[in-house]
Length: 198
Image (tube, rainbow, N blue to C red; front, side):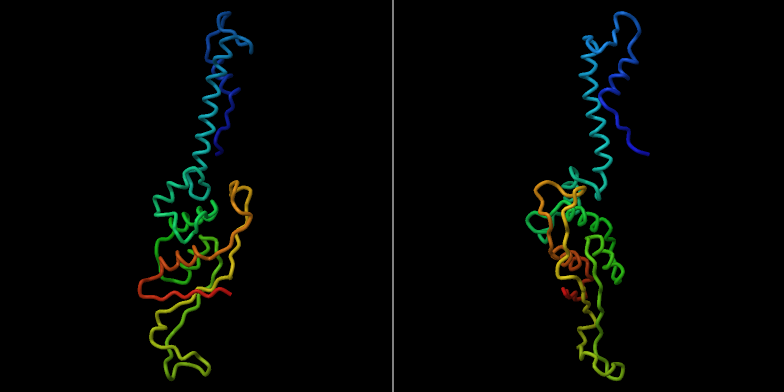
């Protein structure tokens, strides 16, 4: 169900419909009473528009005015995001933090990166075990049991979007700082995440 879009004229018509009938209650546009009601109806129309905007702004994926409150709740903005991250990047980080329930699987970290707007793959390593390894396998030591590698493009480009970006933002931005910070923050404490940008 869509939110009602009520204009000042709609409210004026409603106000006049609630007034008693008679010569004392004129409805013509030049009457003093109509001018007073038109002044009041503008405030009601403005409040309706603001309430409709609150329905959009209450959700983190479409938030603009409430975005700083979402960020404050989640411990953002993050220094990894840089000095002036785009609104779209800030929203993505809020959504990723809200959706991050914790996990240790490849699927979990792939989804975490996707929520941030990055496409990644993950490579797992294992230590070299004589008799179980094949010719040409790396001679990894025991610490490699705890290492895993995030494979991402060198540059993940975010383009200016007319429906999601705001005036003053760059037409394109590219970096992987947020990806690296968020994955490092959510990586299990006993593991060693490595990052490969190709």
